[in-house]
Image 1 (spheres, rainbow, N blue to C red):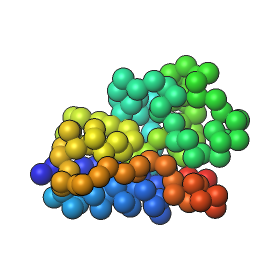
Image 2 (image 1 turned 180 degrees about the horizontal axis):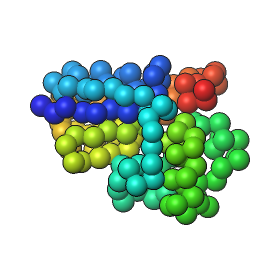
Image 3 (image 1 turned 90 degrees about the vertical axis):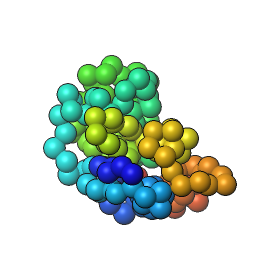
Image 4 (image 1 turned 45 degrees about the vertical axis):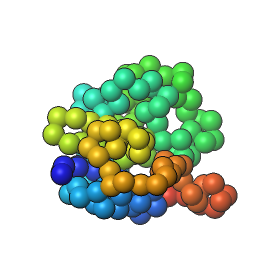
Length: 141
């Protein structure tokens, strides 16, 4: 099994669920605080691979939900500069296993990458359940 370096927002319901899924599959999870990590553009960029800039962002971040930041109108350099200064904007989790990096938690992709315990169904593990219920969300803090 793999050792997964897992950059999260402590207290995020989905990050907690994602870590439990990884541990249940036999992986070791090393959780680090995404918000206090000292990010640099050249270190952060590889996590996003071939994703479009729009998909680099945490859609639950207040600045995005309120329309203050429109990710689809940003260059890579502008997006990275914003994320370095405001890590809450970063799509989470960021994960690393060896040299392989990933942003977000798509169960199909994670299963194909490192394997997950057999599940009968795949769940939405990226949308904040609190936001869907119209209450305050871990992504808003």
